[in-house]
Length: 490
Image (cartoon, rainbow, N blue to C red):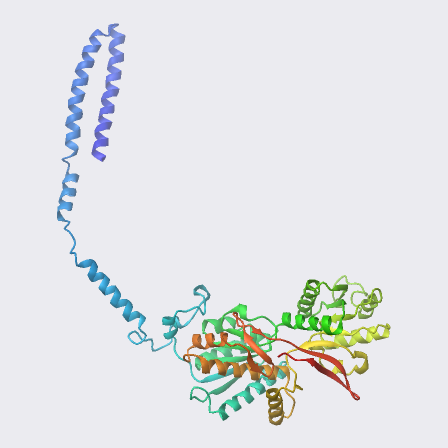
């Protein structure tokens, strides 16, 4: 086509010459007769040139090379396509067979980064995972400011581990309990996860502290190291498929408590006291408010307590007494408070001094010795919790007895949750197809109605526990005041 374009361009030049010749001849001669003779001659000559030029296009060196190239192309061997298909089928067979294509050492294929869906793996991919050692870890602050939480978690897991040894282990294997002290530091938690991965730990129990719950999240999920948080109040399942939590969800606890208030206490009017110095209190208050409105109950007051150090806050905004006095207008049936127990104690005192005999409603943060010391003043306080050490449930009674004998004190909620978390992991190991992380994860997700000392537990699709609350009311038995369980989950 390039040669043809050149020739057509040449014709265009001829036509331009013709126009010039025609114009000049007419102007000189004043007559077009002679011009027409010249035109006839010009057209004949141009036609001959055009035919000659076009015929020359087909015989260029470029066309000859194209013909020669085409002559070299032969028809393919009819067996080639079948041979290629046979080779591909054989390759796929070998690749998909974990025996024919083994992976003896951990590689990047064992990791599950976010971009490939973390735990979403095919059966073939799972079979490529290296089986983990019969080891269960505990990550907790055993020293430092958070030591109390860590020791409780360690004690619960230690008792469960001791009982497992007495039963002869699981899958004919004895399991080690490896404990790592985070010292309450983010770096400590990260080092602990690395140590567990180095030792091929199958899964670990995480104490209810923030440095354990969140700081090692990336390493936990990429390394497919299962973590069951025992007591964390924050949602963890949404942060990755290898994060599990067996703690009572606050949303469920609020529903259970308000359900008891509506149907057993017949209370209709509620007020909320928000502690703005406590982020957990803000979250919990929002949950109570939403559930109150959903139930069509009457929210009489929303009180707010600001930190005294907050800029531009009035004395009224930072005074518990000033806030409590607002309850005298349209007094509620109960006051919901979601802050810590020490503030709760002060609020109850202020209400009684103001002549308000209004019971308090809240979470388990109120269940501390300082609040209990209020005695008669705090009578009628209602809270929800995740554990009842005074339960008549046979399994719980045995746990409390054994724990008290071993450690010399009654188990806390965190100790009980750690005990249950260890046993849930053991149950998953027993039911799993293998000791590979993905098989253990799937077995955990399949747990339904696990009979633990913290109540029946089902693991939801994101690794969050689905369970019901224990409801407590503060009262007295004789001259002793305490929180008494009035409803247990069944």
